[in-house]
Amino acid sequence: MNFLSNIKRFAADKINQVSNEGLIPVPSVNNTGYSALGYLKSLAGNLGKPFAIQSNPETNNFLQNTIDAASKSDGKVTFNQNIKDKDAYDSLGSNIANKAFGRYQGNVNKAGEVIVKDDYDTNRSVNWHKNRVLSGKDKEGNQLGLKDRGISAISAVHKFMDNRGLTNARPYGTEVNIGIVKPKSILPSPASIPTINKPQYIVKSGDTLASIANRMDVDVNDLAKRNNIANANLINIGQTIV
Image (cartoon, rainbow, N blue to C red; front, side):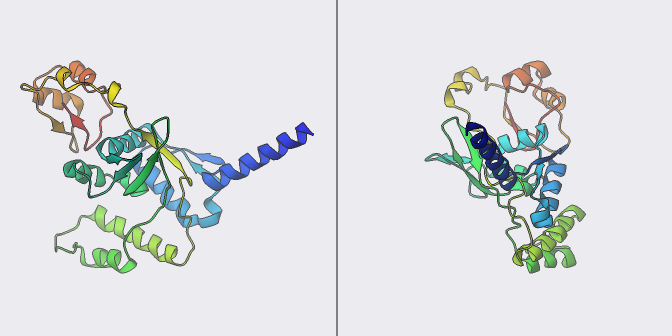
C-alpha cells in the first residue's frame, strides 16, 4: 500500500513540476539567452511547457541586483519605475535580462527568498510596439537604435499571440525564486565602509572592476573584498561599487 502511495506521490510531484517549471532542463548561457529562451517557450504555448529553462550565474547576479535596488516593505519586494533608486532602475531596466521578468512584485518567505509569480508580458499593445518599429522613434520623438526596434518587433508578435490565448504566460514557472533579501545583520555597517576619497560608482557598459579600481585609485583586490565580489570578472551594469 505504501509502495502504491509513493508511486502516486512521485507522479503527482512530477506533474506539478511540469506544470510549474517543466521537466526537461534547457540550459541558458547568459542574460540574453535566458530571456530569449523564455520568449520562445512562451510562444510555443502548451508545447513548450515540458521544458525547464535553467538559470545561469549572470542572470542570477542580475536578478539579485534588482532585489537589492528594489523597494521593500510588509514582506514584499517591488521592482518597477517607482523605486527610490531611479538611476539603478534605469540601468537595470536597460539590460536585456529585464525582459524576462520586467517589473515585478515578489513575496519574501521565512528564509528571505524572493518568490515571484512570473508573467511573461510585454506590458504594451501591439500598435505601441508597431509604431516604434515603423517610425524608429519613441513617443517623445527620440531616435531608437536597432536593438530597441528589434525588441519591439518581437514584443509585437508576442503580444499579438498573447491576445489570442496562444502563449504560455509563465515560461519560467508559476513561482520562481529569484534571489534573497540580504539581512541587515550581514551587510557592512556604514562605519566599516571608507567614504573619504571613496565615492560610489555605478557600473556602466564596458566597465571592468580593474578599470573602476584604477578610477578610484585603489587596489582591485581590495575593491573586490570591500564590495563582497567573489569573482572580479563578474560585475553588472547598474551595480554600485563603493
